[in-house]
Length: 397
Ligand code: LMR
Image 1: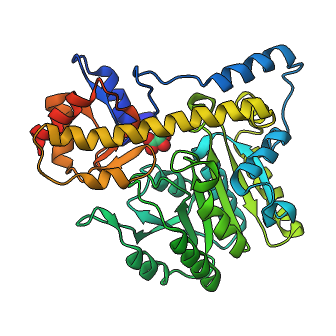
Image 2: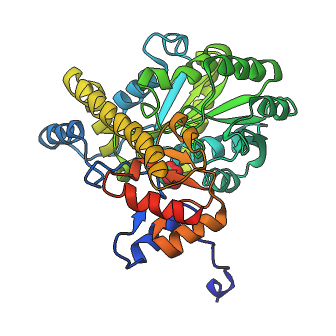
């Protein structure tokens, strides 16, 4: 017998909450754990642009034959345009190559495994805190993990000086995980000037940025949110990007993302990319088509693209409204503690500063689920559930 020797794995800090939430029989329970967008009626909608693209695909698709290892070609092209803009040097100089991959997680995993198998870069620096799955992905791929300071609990803000101080101790060839926008879990991003400073630091120390870019369009806009990536890509000769369309196209269960390599020359990136393909072949051979075809159909059609952009703005604006309403409603429930910092955070999440004990109390006594770090998914708030959430928070403070 071999299975009896296997230790029980701890519940996943984010997806484990969804399991616990589903099993909870209490009325009025609220799940603000996992980052999933909900509309005002509490549903996770399929975007109209997605439905229209799917209708088009259903009538025009002629074959279900295998894709190439790197996936749908047209998709990989539009991914690069979305990331860098059509006129960025890495695109026009053909210094970037992209492979479709299963969601942000799959893209990060492919990137990490490619690095471990083929390069001397075996250490990755991640922010403290970072997305709960980063450590899991990178450890599984064989990377050693180090942390750089990022968040300052006392100010509910960023500690950029500490971030620099820590990264200055990194060695040439070390990887630096950077959140492209809407930092998960804090919602606190780098400013334009800070991006330049980080790019210069990576350049002078020979550090290799790996961007996790899962929320493009959820901060300030599609191009605005890519500012940091574009600044770094203009200065640093080699980097990697793992991006996801789970959130901005609402394609969560299609598992659609991409891994992009940027190299200093077309020749070097082409050689390296052959090993990315080999990594993919050894994992899942080649990717599934549907999600990529949806994205490339939308981005390849002016009308559908416009519709998608307006739907994305709608999601972004609703989250921003919920952010303000959240701050107001806490006051309304008599909370005197200052939560105004929540208004300046970006993306789906609010890093509340609630303690582990308060998070547990919220779940046990009020059926309100948030991540153990105190991260709250603002994207799951509605006008209807807001009073329940704020009353519960007021009660545990
Ligand atoms: C999250 O952080 O909630 C999302 O990225 C979903 C996930 O897989 O954890």
